[in-house]
Structures are given as structure tokens and as C-alpha cells.
Image (tube, rainbow, N blue to C red):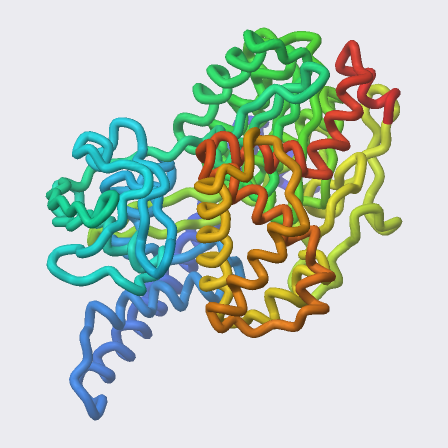
Length: 517
């Protein structure tokens, strides 16, 4: 007889616990030995490089390179070493802010020109106005500068100053010294009520103020007569997970799932559920996405699509289906580490296929099929597949050909566009911000471009007439009535927005957008 059968149950439990502890201890000892061996290996290599390499080395840079290389070996573009400078930029981007003077500028006649000072910014407080020409920055001429060069030089450390010489009107020059401050960009823009009570707004990022801005903007649209809503998240790179959850929460009902994260650690496994009453119940909705819609924006689109809350239009989204945690390091840097993957309420993965695999198309039959509570088909396999595919995923071929012929002169083409728009406004050729662009205006622009020495063929310019008219019309609206009117014009001429508006004008309840589909 096996003698262990004579032992009481408590003794057997004790033996099992001791055996488990011994095995666990062996495993931990093995892991510790491997860690120690790895540390010794890295130290040995560093010591050899430090003492024997043909040139002196910066040891701190080598350690940073070793960390960066280790994370790079994971093969995950979202897991990376973040230098102190990049960490500061990342923190600012999370608040959708930058440090500068608050000027929106463009190039006009070869000079950096003020398009609009931001409300409450150092530039506005100093009295800078639309149309002011920036002549000098800290004693250096700004003639010939690009917009990017101007932005880089106007930005800088918080509290630092920049000295500008500004030309206003016919030769009047003033000198101002501006102290750089934190400038906050808006996360929600281009709000307008279209025909038929269709409210439209664009969410450009998910910063720490997106939810609050969205509430304010939708309430404003509702007061202005909006009875439905287009939520445009095209080109939105995402941002803060909590803000994406907060925005989805505004449109869903309590208890409805928003997103699930799954990872190796217990903290990485979490289900986010709607916790508040739907703020605008009964409001029919359309969501717009494209190939640059990513991250938190995809979470919102996926949740609203899975719960039959909104019809999704556009092109398949980017497919950024992972969540990162940023861990600060003692040297002021940090590492970003992917710790979980995101899944929609129906369990769809947002992650795209690995780079060595063929990406799936919008309605590829290889995509896994899911069904919503109403029986609608939605697809997994990476990104958010729109219910209605509309809009081009690339530039129009005629537009591409014109820009290709202009080549390095594209910035000067923009100068010609701006100058011709300003000339037409000054000549009072337009009376209303929703004017129709005339063929003779395009002819004037072509003549101006030739005079500036821009090289392109007449046939290519003619074939791109729709693109040229659209860009010229938008610039005339901006010059004549301001950025807000130019944005309204762009929205009304957008084929994806118009398709969404067509569905919404027929809808009396949220589910009607699918019936109308």
C-alpha cells in the first residue's frame, strides 16, 4: 500500500504547498539568474566599448541606444524609448497645446503673413491683426521663409520672448516683443448647421478637453436648430483612451459596453461601460472615418457602430488597436510600452494585419463577420469598416498629375492661389461666401502662375479644373470672410459629408439612418 494514503488530508495539502513553493522558488531563481547574466553581459560589452573602441564614446548615449534597441527588437512601433524632449512634446500633445505666440500664418507674396491671431494669445494681446506681414524675427529677415520655418521659430520654451517687426498697410512698421505661452488648440472644430437641420462638427484629436468641447459644441448646434449630427473623425489620430470612452459615453445608454482591453497583466484587462444617461437621446447620427482615423477615434466609431447608434461612412480606418502606458525614467526620459489590445463591444479587434501580410479591403470576404443586436453586418479584421464606403482613399488622379508637374513649386502655387484670391476680393468680384467659382477666375490664376514662372501643361491644368476651382473658392472665402466661412464652404462641398447629410435628412430616429441606407 502507498504510505501517502495514510496521511491526513491536511498533511497532503501541506506537502502540496511546500512542493509548489519549492518549484516556484526554483523558477524565480532561474529568472533571477537569467536577469543577472543579461546584466553582466551588457556591462561587459559596455566596459569593452568604453575602454577599447578607437574613439571616445558618450556612455550615456550608448546606454540610451541600448534601451532603444531593446524596445525596437519587440517589433512594435508603439513601444519605444522617449527622450526628455520628446516626452515634453508628448505631454503637450495630450493637452492639444504648444508653446508659442498664437499666430496662424501663411506665405503671401513671399512673406509670412498673419491669417489670424488666436483668441487670448500673446499675439492678440499685442494687437497683431489679419494681414500683418512679419518682416523680421529677432533681427533676421523673414523674407522667403516657409510656413514650417516660421512655426518652428515662433515656438519655444515657456516664458521666452521673440521680437517681431511687423508691416501693416502701406509701409507702416511696428515692433512688438511677445512672451511665449501655452497655446491650446481646439479639439472640436468646423461646427455648422447644414440644410435640413443636419449639424456637423469635426473632432480632430482626443486631448484632455475633447469631451467638454464636444458637449459645448453639440449643445450649440442644437440651439441653432440641428436635429441630427455628423461626427467627422477623418484624419483624427486618436489620443487619450479616457477621452474616447467619455465621448462614446455621451451617445450610448447606461450599461452598454464601450471597449475592452486585454493584456498579460491584471491591470491591462478592463471593460469600459457607459455610466451616464445618453445626453442627446433620439439624435440620428453619422460618423465619418478614413485611413487616418486611429486609436481613440476608432474606439468611438466602433462602439457607436456595434450598438446601432450611428451609421459609419467613409473608408476603412487605420487599425491602431493597442494601448500603451508611458513609464517615466530617472533620467527624465520614459518608455512607451504596449500593454493591451482593444476590442469593440462585439469583440472585433482593431489591430491591422502584420506588415508582412496583405491588408484587408473595406468589404473583404476574409474579414470575420459580426452582427449587431438589430442583425446588421459589421466586420472585424483590423480597423473600422464603414457601413457605407464613400470618398476617395487617395488624391484624384488629375489633382495628383498637376501637383506632380508643379513639383518643388507647390508652395509657390499656394502663393499664387492666395494672391489671386486676394485680388478678386479686393476687386469685389464676390458678394457672398457661398459663391460659385467662375471659369475666368481660373484663367486669371493660370496667367498669374505663368507670370511667376511655374511650369505645368495647359492640358493638366484643365483636367484638374474641379480641384483648382475648389481650392481657389476656399481661399477666396478665407480672404473675404475669414477661416470660419472657408471651413463652412469646405464642408458643404465635401462629398462624404453630403452623403451623410442625405441619410440624416430622411431620418426621424437613430435607427432610421440604417433603414434609409
